[in-house]
Length: 142
Image (cartoon, rainbow, N blue to C red; front, side, top):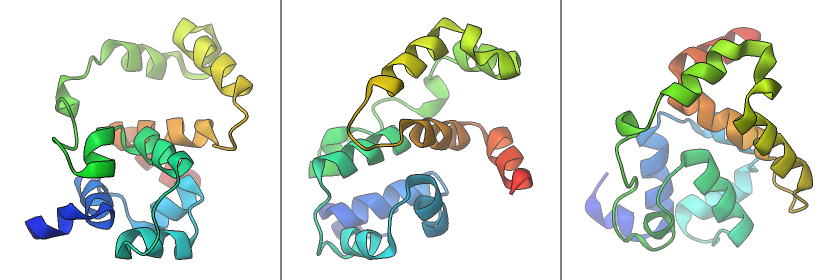
């Protein structure tokens, strides 16, 4: 991808998809994005709404300034530097996830949202992006 492609939103979206090995099909499935919307974003003929930006930020976990304006870097810190203990504990807890305080808080917050975003799908997509084992497990279930 040439540097000039990153001057527009569509180029930055494609870069995020490439960094995270996310296909168009996965975007459509995991975020319920329609083909016309996606095509508009990629060709820069459709500007994403604030709700769309929020959804994409949640999905990719990227820097807002970079996604919306091309300022800075896609990620403030390398994914490898994120703390792993909480997620490992969560993965080990299996079906007991609601006993984990962080999951209780997330479930409570998500249940209160009225903005039309399916945050559980965003959480699932982020988890699949960060943990290849989970992504493979999801593929086997389909």
